[in-house]
Amino acid sequence: MNTYIFILCPPYSGSTVLWQLLATSPLVSALPCEGQVLEEVKDIMRHQPWNAATQMPWPTIKAVWERYWDLSKPLLLEKSPPHLIRAQEIAAHFNPAYFLIMVRNPYAHCEGLLRRKKGTATEAAEFTVRCLRLQAENATRLKHTLCFSYEQLTDQTQHIAEQITAFIPQLGPLQHTRQVKVHSMDGDVERGIINLNAPKLSQLSAAEFDEINQVLTRHADVMAYWGYQFLDVGEMPSSVRSDSYSQLA
Image 1 (cartoon, rainbow, N blue to C red):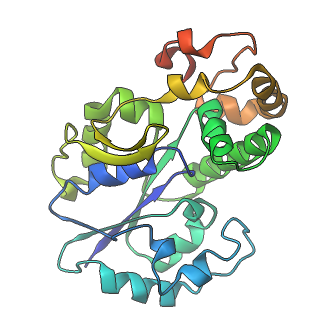
Image 2 (cartoon, rainbow, N blue to C red):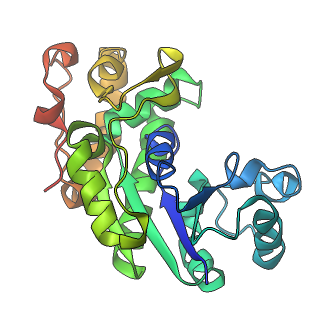
């Protein structure tokens, strides 16, 4: 029997790095790209993907994915950001399924959305809060979950790799020092796993910080749930150590 591993992570929050880390296990078969953009299902899965009311034909999707997975391997890996709003449905159609739930500093997440022209700073912050709340619900409601942050993954890579292996022993040791290929604010690069929050925050203007804070301060509960702290709009982010503003409790 195959075991499914789903990465639940908002867009622009490090899911590709985590996906490549897991794929270093010889017992893992990963799809060639995000499952949502495979040719046979992209018209279905990319139609209003962030609308929770959109119905997904999971048996059809599963059959397509199985044509790409190497079913001779025990662990089948998938990551598409909109999965985090449909995790309960996924759990009902893929069994047994294990979920790796990852979040990122909300200011850094907003910067990633803004850099890709995904709306205003207010809209970016509202989407970020939505993702944090959905991830908190997933952490509470799903079985077989392991939660950590982008900051923990990048600052404590060996520790998180060991936690993942303890969570899914079939994986065996993960090669946490291997170079990974990512598309980041530096373009398409290949390098070790590093924390890019500080340079991302340095790109936000004072006005954008203010807009983001106006949204985040209305959701102090979810900020506290994930252990994230508010940044003062006058603080120079480039001078702030990444581990001083992004910690999980």
